[in-house]
Image 1: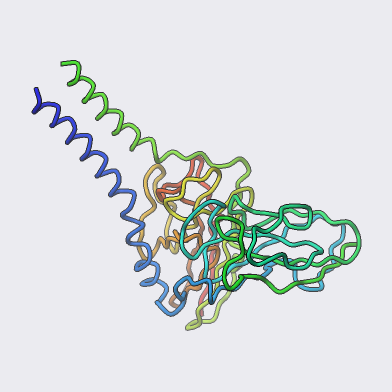
Image 2: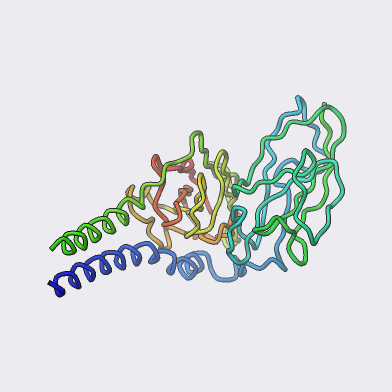
Length: 161
Length: 141
């Protein structure tokens, strides 16, 4: 009787292990494989110290007619992770609209001037009234606090007509 | 004897859960695209180029992270979409971006190549339905 139970438990364990192995296999192969195909020097190791945060779109000085547009958020040498996710060398985007940089040691405020993208979004649909506006990106860690040193974009100015 | 059945039931349950873990639903309207290069783009040989991963109505999360409506990018080079329901292969034709990367630099041999993005869930399995970009063709010369 005991043997059978042990057998069943072993079966369960082995099923789990094999499933686990199947899941992690690509993960383990990931770094070397991508580098093998793309040559090691092409993509340096992810590191917040050398990260670059920037606007893919719009550009500094872009004139937008109508006021509705997609902001495409660009990040180099770092990855995106949703809020609350503890994975090294990641963060999530915050879009600062018509505002100065917030405190670099506290959670980024969440309001009309500080949009959070805690679900790991890399693009945002934004609507702004006619006029001149500033946009700046600031990466936040799992607790919405800027990294040390902070990972932020250049502040750009756009005009909505 | 009851314990025995319980043990077998548990084993079956665990096996079932492991199998079902692959089926992550895709968010409605999820749209994946290659922001750069463009379809038909001619690129200089011997020079790495950047590939921009575009994604709308969905978020990016590293591998192993369970978060609703997210996934991570895979770049398929010169290959068809892999089969549904199983982890995306990891080789020279299937590059994984499990650290949550949203762009990459690659270099390809001279000639015609196809590029396609495919999202994978926390276990590298495509969503249901798959969130894939249009397959583009680029020319390196």
